[in-house]
Every structure is written in C-alpha cells, then in structure tokens.
Length: 356
Image 1 (cartoon, one colour):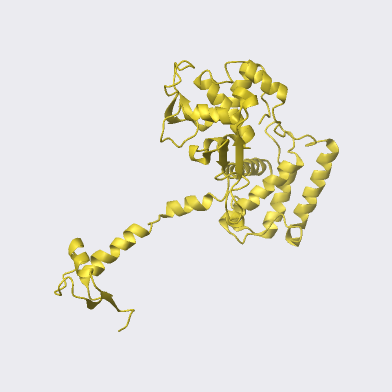
Image 2 (cartoon, rainbow, N blue to C red):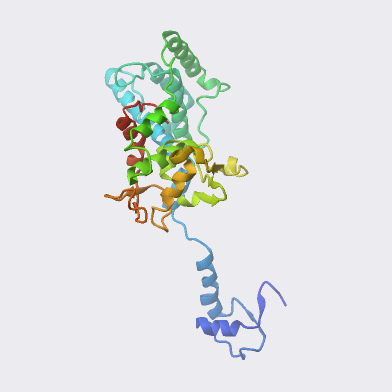
C-alpha cells in the first residue's frame, strides 16, 4: 500500500457523516482503505476544515504593515522630515539656479548624480530660521536619505561608506562642514533628558494635588511617575504600550516584564535576548511613595478585565470612596500621556523641560 496515496481509515465514515461530506458504503465500524483524491467528500469537507482552522490568510496590506514595523515610529517620522526638507531645498535651488536638481534623484540611484547633488545639499541646507544644522543632525539627515533609498532598493549604493570612492567628494565636503561647524561651536551642547532630582520629586509631592493617593488624578500621576522611574520606560510611546498583564504580583512585590522597547524591539538580531525583567519590592519606609504600594492602590481601583494600563479617571472620586472604581475602561490617549509630567511640574511650579 502506498502511504502517499491512501490511508487506513477506521472511523472516517463516522467523521464524514458528522460533517455531511463522505458517503462510504462500508459500515461505520469496518476499517477500509480509500484514496484521498478519489473521495470527494473528504477533499471538499475534511481537508478544508483543517486548513481554515490552522492557517491565517494574509493580505498585501498586512504584509506591508509588518515590514514597516521593523522601523520605529520616530525613525519613520525622521525619514519623512528629511525627505520633506530635501524636496523643499530642491524646489528652492531649482528656482534660483540654472542647474536643476532632478526630481527622481533617489529613484535613479546613480552614484555620480547622487554624489554631485548631495554634496550641494550638504552645503546649502539650513533650518527654517536660516541657521546651519549641527554636525550630528546633518549626518543623521544623510542616514535617513540612505534609509529611504534602501527602502526603494535594498541594493542601493551606500552613500556614507568611506570605502566607496564614488562618494569621496561627498565625504570630503561633509568632513569640511563638520570641522567648520565644530570651530564655530555649532552643536557644542546637546539636549539630553535630565532625571528628576530628589528636591524636585519632594516638590511634586508637596504640591498635593498632583502626587499622592487621595484622588484618581493624583494616583494616576504618581503611578505614571514611578513607572517611568522604576521600570525605565522611555517616552510616551512605551507608557502608551504598557499593559496590566506585564505586572505579576509575587511575594513582597511585583515583577515587571518588558514586552518591547526602542532598544529591545525583538527583531532578528535580538531573538536570543531575554525580555527585561524588573523587581518592584515593597518598601514600607517609603510610605505613599512606595512603587509597590501605588500599584496595589491602582489595580484595585481599575475595572477588572482591562489590559490597558493607563485608564481615564472618573470624575468626583476621592479617598472616602475606596470601594468604588476610580477609573473607566477607556485608555488614556497618547497625547494626554505625553503631557502628564509637564502638567505635574506646572502645578508644582518646577521646571519640566528635558525631564524624563
């Protein structure tokens, strides 16, 4: 018997009768052999059942969306900004110069053409206020151009490769611009995010309204502050993606497990990297400022079954209504989350710029 063309079927008649597909003449309990290709009922009914329940039917839009997810949202936005800046420069240059920059320069991907026009772009590009971009920003702009070219054609020439002689003029031009800007002090200072000092944190607590557990908004602000501090969350996007299921209650505290972040997106290069795990232990000496205590207070005041972490506070709730839910099941929007720290600092009359 050829296994590839026939199979031994002991109860297949009963299965076929249940699915109203196969009409074998043999009794239900009588073993028999039959060919899959010759059994219309099994082919039309049994086989598709397995296929439909096991495999997912994809679409072009879904595949395109998944391929774009390899690039962080902010990186995509930066690429769009650079392309807009380049197109604005090209229009201005073509308006005032007899030598016109081609509109399809990135589609052509001709090394000589790219080398010629990109070095001119490097010299002429300016901010809206007319100032020159710092060296690091200028380099990142060319990285974005390369990223866009590679999205069109994975084999596009590497305009930033030092060992590519086709772009030696561009490299020399950029090198000269960087040295000139360095000598002029352009880009000498950087805007790095600064952590809150102990004095600033105390000031937030003393403000009363914006930190504590006496009201939904105060509790929300407190938990937002200590989630960022204790779980090392970067920016509003990681706060927005936070889920209740990432916090596991254990003896003495919680364990927070990171799903994905900017530096740990989980791509090809990070398949063997374990998810970041943070232990949040109960600290009784900290009182209301204990992160574990705040999580306990927050979780018992949000609706059960909701996995979004940050939920909209309900109006007219206070400490006297401990057994009443303080939050709705509606998640807080990204824009609102992005202003929480700013609003807290404004209420406490402390500086919020470049704070994280």
